[in-house]
Image 1 (cartoon, one colour):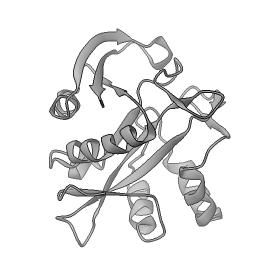
Image 2 (cartoon, helix red, strand yellow):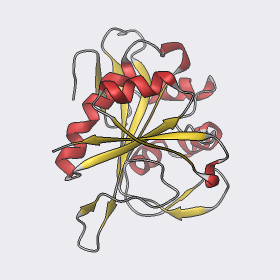
Image 3 (cartoon, one colour):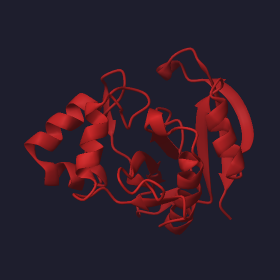
Image 4 (tube, one colour):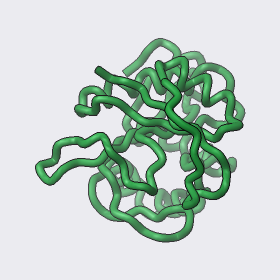
Length: 194
């Protein structure tokens, strides 16, 4: 899937060396806790298993506080920049949702999940429009899955992320504090997919 600025790719062997390089340089695909050391260890032990597990279903995930919860259905896409052929990997975006007993998507999320979409760009590539283009590219996937809308949050002081969300049709819903994640104020947006 591509919009010209970026394309989104399911994690694969072709981009794995660039992904490893980003992890080794200190980048983490998780903005709530640094998962780089554990991902590097998993890649070193079993690269194919690591890749298969990124978009797998079931199992557990560890939260920033160390607790474990059931993993939600979801997809991860690696963001590839069209204007950087020599080093195209610039970040990742993920989409997650809940399903009912029949496997149909439902719009609600558990309290430990702040939104349907999360993204992160390598710091030296921020400000080039990659996150905005990646969010625009993942919204059709959310629609195809059957979600009527996506909720997306950002820290209240993250003006760049606010602009990205608003550029993609995000409508401000509320500011809130999620005690589970600390005392910082966060902003909730809603992007209608219908």
